[in-house]
Image (cartoon, rainbow, N blue to C red; front, side):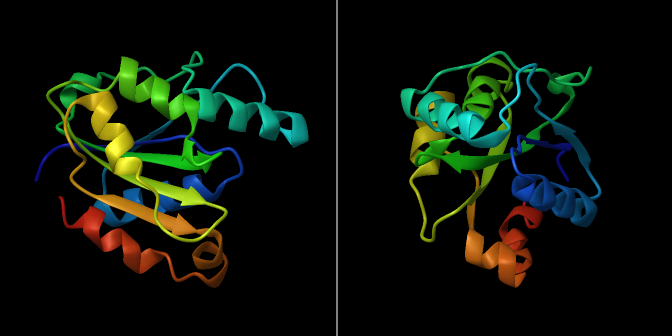
Length: 155
């Protein structure tokens, strides 16, 4: 089993909930990407969408951890304006070890799948092992947990 790290960003708690469930199922390490600025309220929501659509890379804060110790990264992101959250983009561009394998899980307000795997492949230079999308209705109904099997099967 490859040494696995779950790395996620969560603005409203949905991506955090999924990340924590994955960490529990896989018994692996987990860290949260944070920022020094707040994204609370409607202004934070609007700025988040604008940054995501512009593909910006805001400064991020990570716990002290040696990322090179991990072979597989499960990266969690909310979807903002149809794209990955800008703090996750920063992680993938600046921090993800180039030799590591990765998978993506995302949460979003709408339904249907997004081409997040294609977007991350352009950033990293290789395709993710798995892409799992979870919509708001699945989060509310609790029907999202079975979708995590494709991630847990990587271990």
